[in-house]
Image (tube, rainbow, N blue to C red; front, side, top):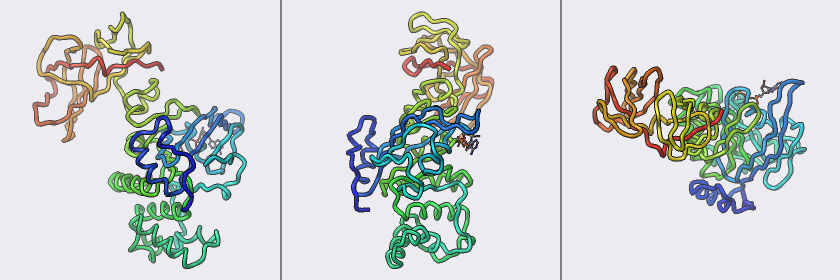
Length: 376
Ligand SMILES: Nc1ncnc2c1ncn2[C@@H]1O[C@H](COP(=O)(O)OP(=O)(O)OP(=O)(O)O)[C@@H](O)[C@H]1O
C-alpha cells in the first residue's frame, strides 16, 4: 500500500469533518474515488434495473446504497465489480475509465452475503488464496495473512478449518479475505444480513473501525435504513433504478427530499396539506405553522421532535390528543396518539419524568422549525 490518493478529497464540497479525518488516514493508503455517469441497465425487454445513475463516491468514503428489494442496488454493485456490463454510461475508478475493464483487472473486491469460503481449507489457506493466485511469495503471503488476521481479530483462529467456525467468524474471514489483497475499493453486498441482531451490531462497529483504519473506499449495500445510518458517511437512496437522494445520514433522515425517501427512512407521520395560507398549513391534525414549509403537498412531522405536556394546554402549534398506545423501551417511549380521527406517532426520551399512560389526555407541542412539506 505504497501509493497515495491522487485527489485531496477532504477539500471537496460535501466532505464532512468525519470523512475529512478518515481521508487523512487514507492518505497513506490506497483509496479510489468512483464516478458513475448515466448508467443504464435493462434485463430482457421490460425490466429496467438502472435508469440513468449519476453518482460520485469520494476516496476513503463509507458509502451506502440503500433501497427496497429490486431497486437496483446489487446491479449497481455488480457493474462496479465488472460482473455486469451497463447498456449505457461510464464508470471511472481512481481516475481511470474501467467501463470495459474485466473484473480481474479492476482493483475492486466484493464481500457477499454468502461467505463463499472454501469450507475444507484452514482460515490461513482461505486468506492466502487470492495472494497465491497473484503469485505473491509464501513468506510475504504469511506476513500479510497474519497482519490482516490480527486486524480483524482472527489471530487465534488462523489454523482452524472454516467448517469449524461460527457464522460471525466466517463473515469476518470473508471480509479479511477481501481485504488481504488490498483493493482500492471494497464492495459489500448485504454482508451482515444473515447474522443475528447482536452479532450484527457488533460486526457493524468492527467493520466501521476496519474501514477507518485502512482508509479504503467501501461501497455497502443494504435495505436496512438503521444499518445505513449507523455505518455511512453518505447514503444514496434508490427506487426503481433511480437515485432519489444522496446525503449524510442526518440529511437523508431529517430532510428527505420526497415522500418515498421519508417513508423508507421510517417516517409514518405524513399528512396531506388540504389548505395553505402563507406559513399556515391545514391538515387532518388541525392548523400548524411551519417555519419553512415548502410547497409540497404532504406535511412531515418527525416523532422525536414532539413534546408532550400533561392535560390541556392552549397555544400556537399545540394539539390536543389522547394516548392510544405506549411502547416503553427503557431509554425512550413511543406513543401512538389520537387527534380526532387521525393518529400521530411521538417518541419521548425517558429522563425520569412522568410518561403519560394509555387513555391520558395530552397536549402535543410541534416546533415550526421542525416541519417540512414533501411531494410524492
Ligand atoms: N440477471 C437478471 N436477469 C433478469 N432480471 C434481473 C437480473 N438481475 C436483476 N434483475 C432484475 O433487476 C431489478 C433490480 O435487481 P437488483 O438485484 O439490482 O435489486 P436489489 O435492489 O439488489 O434487490 P434485493 O435487495 O432484493 O437484492 C429487479 O427487478 C430484478 O428482478
